[in-house]
Length: 261
Image 1 (cartoon, rainbow, N blue to C red):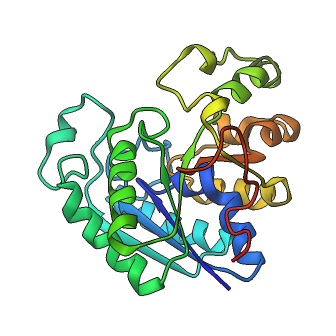
Image 2: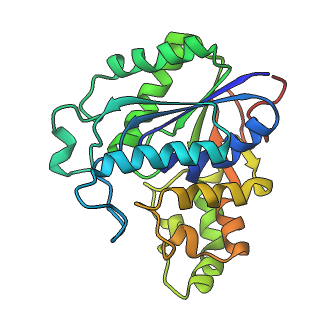
């Protein structure tokens, strides 16, 4: 048995990009630990979900624990930073925001968990955080540094396959009867396929991913892109999880983050 630590910026990030590898590792007998940097205080709330005077952060923490149970996580930890909001918002520089936290300070917190767990594998995000969100970029910086401090042997940077999504854009747009932006023309969105070194087929765990998304009801409505997709289009969009591991490639050389452990 090995230990996978998967590090994310906000509640709900875990199920979208890593829900499959979490459930896969858990079913294969590995220990799965979810670490979340913030409690998602500045998320956009689905109308009618929160109770009267219910704080968003409180709901999102509960949703994370529900999602983690579905995905097979054995431990959930929050680092305690404040959601920084989207890039360019005043909340970026608010006291306690993750974006303004010194990387070394946050990395020491994460490294302590990695050491305690004797982590074999860590996932974080690519250097642009997938799509340029400040907290996602900070997850990359903090995750990479924490792995150095703790000596974690395998680090995978979760990303989006820009070319794969561009190829499936017409199919997904047709399924939704809506226009979907072309990720192939946006250089801030994910990474080109040529830079990706690991592709994990998680189609056996798609029902778990979808259930985990539904657990985040304050953020992901039934009408959202994530849940409105028909099964075939959902499988195309979310049936493979993509990563970059330094020293691997060129091209995709790995299909299982826990191989050999």
